[in-house]
Image (tube, rainbow, N blue to C red; front, top):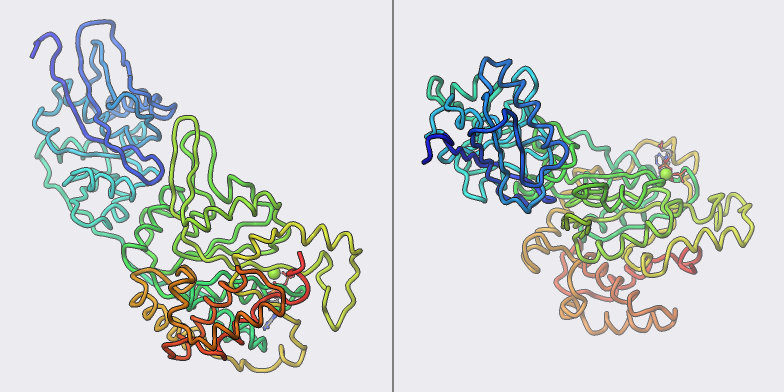
Length: 509
Ligand SMILES: Nc1ncnc2c1ncn2[C@@H]1O[C@H](COP(=O)(O)OP(=O)(O)OP(=O)(O)O)[C@@H](O)[C@H]1O
Ligand SMILES: [Mg+2]
C-alpha cells in the first residue's frame, strides 16, 4: 500500500431494484489533494447529499473529518444507487479510511441506515427486503438502525445488530461494547376484521363470498346503492386462510419498500386488503413514479385482496392495464434507468352499480338513466376484463324487515374453516399456494364427470356464451364440488356455477 494514500476501506451495503437486492461496495480512500469529498458511482440525489449528512454527523459525534482529499466510490459504478440507506456504510468506510476505526472491522461488515445530523441512525424504507437481500448476498451480520431492527430480524439466518447512534456503531465495531442481537417483530393474525354474520339476508351473496374465498376466484358484485356490496367485499378478507410465514414476509417486504408499514410493526399473517379509490391513477394502481418505480395498489395487495369498489367509475384504460398483470401474477415496469418486477398474485373483488343511477333491473325503483348513458357506463368494463370474474353476482336490496332482524347467518370463523379445508385440498392436488381459480381448465376437466361437462356445454350453447364462460363456470364448479367434499364435479355443481354470471345488465356490455 502506498502510505501517501492511506487505507482503502470497503464496507458492504445493498441497493434495491424493486424488491431485488444488489450488492454495493462502499469504498473510501483519503489521499493528497484539495480537501473535500468526491462521491462517484451513480448516486441519486439522496445519496449525493449523504456526504453532507455524514460529515456533520461524524463531527457532531466527536470524530474528525480529514483535511485531505476523500474519495468515495459506490461500486459497481454502473448500478444506480437510490435512497438514504448508504449513510451508515459510508460513515463506517470514512472512519476506517481516516484510521478512527481499525481496518479489521470492515471484514464481513454489512450496514444500512440513514444518519441524522446528530449522529442518530434512522430507518429507511425497505429495511426488510434490504436485510433479506443482504442475507442472500452472503451477509452473516448486518448493522441496522435500532428502530428498524425488529423488521430486519424477521429474516432468518442473519445476525441483525441494532445500532442507535454513530457512537454506538464505533463502540460495537471497535469492540468496546458487546454486540446486541435484535429480537424479531411479533407474528400476529389481527382479529379486527368485520364478521360475515353482520350481513343480513343475501344468502346467495354470502355463499358466493365463501366460494370466492375457497377457490381464489375473482368476484364481481353488481347491485343498487346500499344493498351491501361494499360490506360483503370487506368480509372476504376474514374468510381467506392466514398467510404462511414466507408469504407474510413477502407481503411485509413490499409494504416496507413502499413505506406502508412501520418497521416495529408486528408481522401480519392476514392477507392484505387494498382498496384504492376509483380516482386512482395508472401509476397508483399498477406502480410507477420517477426513479425506480414504486409498487402500486395491485402489488400492495399481493397475496391478498384488491377491492375495486365503484368499478365502473375507474377509467377504462386504468382497468384494462390490470388485465395482463392479473394474468401473469406479476407487474413489470420499465423506466429509462430501471426495469423492475413486482409480484401481484391477487384476488379481485369488485363492486358496481348496474347503471349511473344504480337502479337498473331493480324491482323497487325505476332506473332514471338515459339509454346512451347506460351504454357509455357499461362500455368502461371491457368484455375481456369481465371475463376474469369467475363469480358474477347481481344483488337486490334487502328489505327493511330483514335489516332489523337479528343476525341469522354463519360467522366468519365457521365459514373460514370450510374455506381452509378446500384451500388445503387444492394445495394437495395442485401444489402449494395454488387454488382452483389458477388451474388450467384441461387439468380441471379430468376431475369432472362426463355428464357434468355435457351439461355445461349444452347450457352455454343455449345461451350463446363464449369458451371463456365455459372455463369460468368449470373452475367455480370445481370449488363447489370441493365444498361438498366431492372428488368429482357433478351436474349440480355445474348448475350452481352457471348461476354465478350476470344475466341481464352488465353481461351485455
Ligand atoms: N345485507 C345487509 N345486512 C346488513 N346491513 C346492510 C346490508 N346491506 C346494507 N347494509 C347496511 O347499509 C350500509 C351500506 O351498505 P354498503 O356500503 O355495503 O352498500 P353498497 O351496496 O356498497 O352501496 P353503494 O352502491 O352505494 O356503494 C352498510 O354499512 C350496512 O350498514
Ligand atoms: Mg359501496
